[in-house]
Length: 191
Image 1 (cartoon, one colour):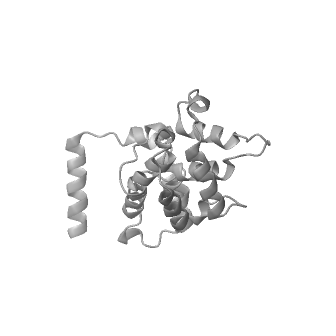
Image 2 (cartoon, one colour):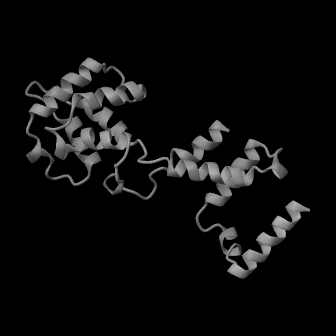
Image 3 (cartoon, one colour):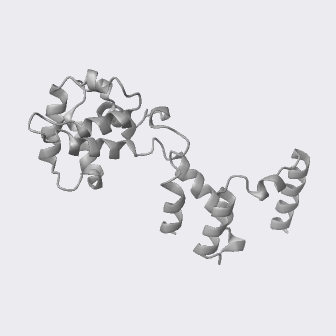
């Protein structure tokens, strides 16, 4: 079941949305806004780095440590990057550019911090999509279909999630027809 849900929950969490269209407003997302928004460079707090590193250690890039991230973050806050970043509109493009910046010796200055912040931007802004997937699974795996295997359930969900599914056309019924079908279904369950 875990593989089945991961197939639907993770990739589709931000489908059709650019990074800038996602509204980060609650919980984790308030901290995402504080650290990943390059316009708030000088007001971002080191505690935000620690917050995400402790909760999502997988976001720490290979070869990086908390000390490395902290050093790069402090350096990032002391630099004036407005001229280098004014050509970019989206925050992910800005972090890609920040990750490519080099010091006078030719060394990358913010490579680990940029990778870390790009990872933070991948955290979905809410769990609504996950809840929708669980709801669809619950509607398909009922008491009457308790023996439905994971592979069959996955195939059902894949077919239902495809855009332009022929079933979409067949599902367009009038409200009166839907009410009659619903009544017949409830009568059958109660008999």
